Amino acid sequence: MTLLEVTDVTVKFAGLTALDKVGFTVEDGSVHAILGPNGAGKSTCFNVLSGVYRATSGSVRLGRRELVGLAPHRIAALGVARTFQNIALAGRLTVADNLMLGRQRLMKAGFLSAGLRLPQARREEAEHRRRVAEIAEFIGLEDHLHSPVGVLPYGLRKRVELGRALAMEPRLLLLDEPVAGMNGGERREMAALIRAAQRGLGLTVVIVEHDIGLVMNLADRVTVLDFGRLIATGTPAEVQRDPEVIRAYLGA
Ligand code: ADP
Ligand code: MG
Image (cartoon, rainbow, N blue to C red; front, side, top):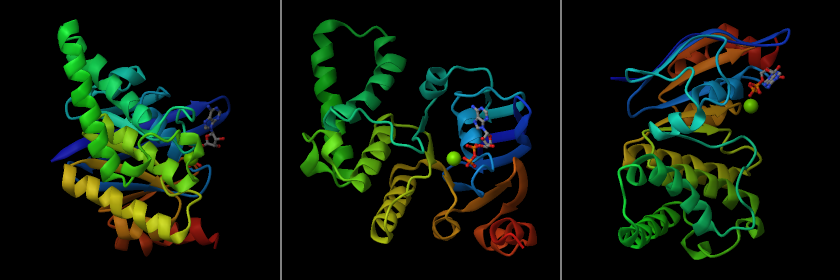
């Protein structure tokens, strides 16, 4: 079943077409990678999916809902969580509180608007704290729950970002270069976590990455962008031997 359907999405900035009629579909429960060299339009694509940018034209459907034109918080409320290419965490807050920030969105979108009363709010918060502790364990940060995020090494901060997105209990998780700047061991650990989130939690994951090696092991399907155009889409094995992809990557 298709969860996400992107059709003819074009994004223009003054004088520059960052995405040119890009279209692809993402199957429910799969890991779909968007691959491409720097400047290809990958982050722009994520910004359209999450409502940060509005497509100049085209459509993005999550199930039957049209996302183009919706504000980011509305899209988040529909179960779309994202991480950013550059870490966007509250460095002075603890790991637990950063994860709670992910829950807060959920509370506003769901429970609170459903008419939660104050006496229940404390029990509600305890329940969220319990879930946050589970997520911290899932990302391997249970021993750092009360550390300020700012003091953690980079690789662990990237995991907190993943955790905060997971704390939103999304259906669709958008990860923008989750292993950027990591060493080999950290990359493998992050890849394993992403797989565990997909398999264990039944999530659909769209991952932006320019490291072709990581994507080959992780993704079910790959869409390749170059200069804002879609140049290939298929299984990792298919795109890896696509002449246009080889040209974009090797500059031949
Ligand atoms: P990638 O993530 O694949 O490296 P981006 O999506 O960040 O690429 O950028 C694609 C192109 O769009 C680049 O040429 C970039 O400079 C341009 N771009 C992205 N965001 C903006 C913006 N807000 N204003 C103007 N140009 C932008
Ligand atoms: Mg980018």
